[in-house]
Length: 347
Image (cartoon, rainbow, N blue to C red):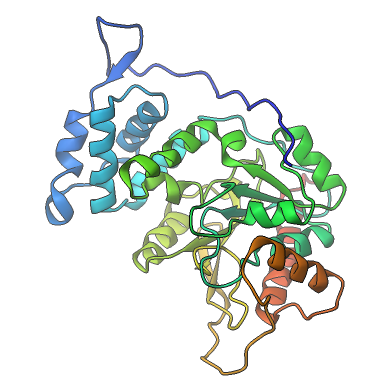
């Protein structure tokens, strides 16, 4: 069973000059109607916010300064409209300010981030295999995400079967790294306010912009390598624009690929295209494989216990690691080392 530890404390709530104080309590309410008016006009009529406006709005949402009625309207409006690059950047500015960053581990490699917010529905979820292979190479690997996802097999469930405990503090994350194990930190402990926004899916029945933000989140205080996946084709353009145009070089690099059922692990039967983003530049890292009848060996079932047993066998060399995943690991190791090398201060 996971260890129980205290939740990380959220950062102090800033006060914005355009907030309105109500007479009924001490919380400063954010007037969201002008924003809803612009983003709520439908796909063709809606206008995107500036980066600063998006930051201010999302910060107010995270701080609970937006009424439930307005919050629901904002989430549904953005769901219909879709986020612009500047809106994603503004949302991310607010998201990053809402929690305490993790200290960047020392060593030969920059940390690698594996978001896991989908799980597997048809194929076995091999995200834990990717994480364990990277950690075995000495790469500090942080897996962050949800513990469960109804109707899917979550990465956290498989990690538990493999005997890996949750990390709920920065010290515990560092301890996992020191023992060449991947650290899994639930989003509730990594970024509690973002976790609260994610939980609204159960209320509204649909995902919201936060589901995109957590996939591009960089929670370390130094550069890292983010493995980012997308499901809908339009996000290839949006996320590509984000990494090319507004993402800070100080955050590190990113690999962007079509998700395997939404996960950032390579498809076991064929390699997806992977684009590498560094310093605002985009490079093709892996070509997409042509369809083939030759399939890699995979677990017989997709349940957590069966998947964990198969992953254990793969780590022991008893079954082959799918070639696409082995290639993904090799590129992660190479780029992680490069990020660390260029971030080291000159002697």
